[in-house]
Length: 172
Image (cartoon, rainbow, N blue to C red; front, side, top):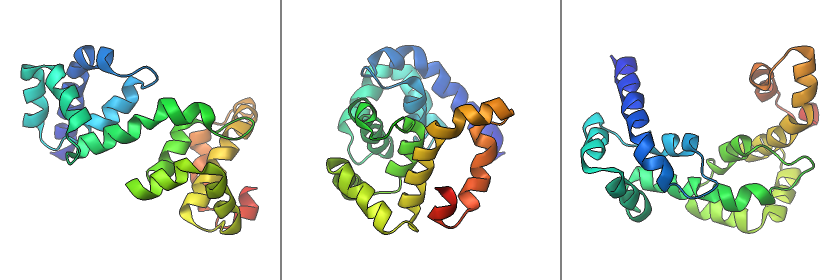
């Protein structure tokens, strides 16, 4: 079935890790590469990289602009540049900001990242958009995660409830 196929796919991706992980730029963790490789559609294509080696895979990730995994890799490469510059005290976790980045196409993503202050202002002016809600959640998590843990809760436990809230006032 589909779940067995996905498990095999993840197993092959794990086998690619020893060759590919050392090739990743500093600041790009394996979890990001794993997400990138998840866009490789067929098991055969993934398995071929086990035979041909990870150098070809890395070349294709960097140079195969129309290839879906390469498009994902371009997004992953934003992490080392953007993560340290995220506004907020404390700043949002990258995983939460990453969900926000995925809401935009390439042009929208570029516009947002070139002027984060303008994007944040747009979120304040129109707080009912999905990106505005994701931004609010991204800001909220680092502020409440410690308090949640003291209560014996985890962010993942309360996130579905927070996502159900439909007004930004409730989230703030």
